[in-house]
Length: 330
Ligand SMILES: NC(=O)c1ccc[n+]([C@@H]2O[C@H](COP(=O)([O-])OP(=O)(O)OC[C@H]3O[C@@H](n4cnc5c(N)ncnc54)[C@H](OP(=O)(O)O)[C@@H]3O)[C@@H](O)[C@H]2O)c1
Image 1 (tube, helix red, strand yellow):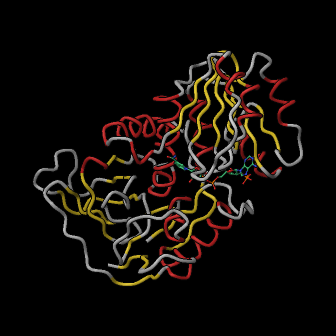
Image 2 (cartoon, rainbow, N blue to C red):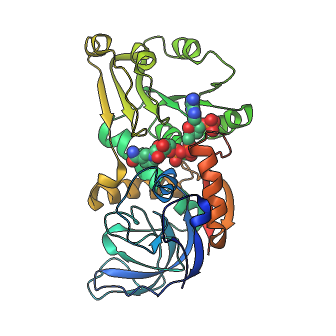
Image 3 (tube, rainbow, N blue to C red):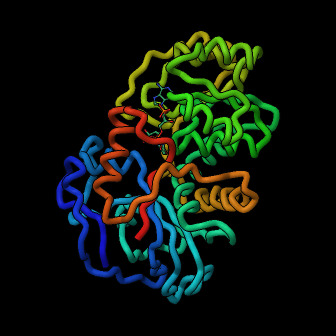
């Protein structure tokens, strides 16, 4: 099979596209003909070595996939050949990556792709969709009628959080770095979308939510608690999920006297059962078109190095090169 892989960490040029041995599925696994994969910032951090990870070379890139079951192992109960499926949380914890033409995936990580939903859409909402779901439902417990601020609403995670919050009946205020991305946020359903480079975001939030924000979802790697805490409501919740090196100051007094809570999580820690519960809702909302994939561009798997270069520009150098996901087809 063809695959995109590395034999050492480094810049995007270390990515090779070539032949690797076909995987051999176990009894608990399905062999998948991969149709589409996507890029997440974590792929860039691991490939570049920014986040040191235990890698065995050749290391296949990628966390998510969507495709068709070719073979189902003898213990597999929920899938049969021909089923269209998506999966996330591969390429970690000893599981091989997804940037391949063929992949063996444990049944516990697989979800059906709903009718009428393409492989590209499903894969583009896999890791970011599960992340959004865990943070909103399991942790912040966002309720209908509440107000949420999503800092970075046109990105992969932010666009999923924004749409799920709307599906849950919340009011959404969000930010983006250009007027075009602000327009995208409005299109995705934001009640108020602001250009964080050109507008006084905090003043607009105060006007939009005079009682304070019920939830602040931070997607940027440098959370600013001095800014966020005063804007939270009584019993406000804040979600942080990026910025491993971030060590910001924290205003303890203003935080606890309002009974606020802070949630941090990494989606890769969630058990398969938790991830499948998230996938069930994601599939439902995808079918109902309440959730739409925010795909910035589609490339071919052989262009994995180019895809990483663009993602790195956007995520690490913050050039704003992307508005959503890069999807790669096989
Ligand atoms: N903990 C977890 O489980 C988990 C899961 C997924 C992702 N993550 C992490 O979450 C982060 C976001 O991931 P992603 O896939 O959404 O990345 P992304 O698609 O690159 O989006 C990044 C977002 O940040 C926004 N942004 C950048 N600077 C900003 C600023 N100063 N103010 C407001 N917004 C700003 C960008 O907006 P503009 O382009 O408009 O500037 C963009 O919307 C990454 O660090 C990723 O590693 C963590």
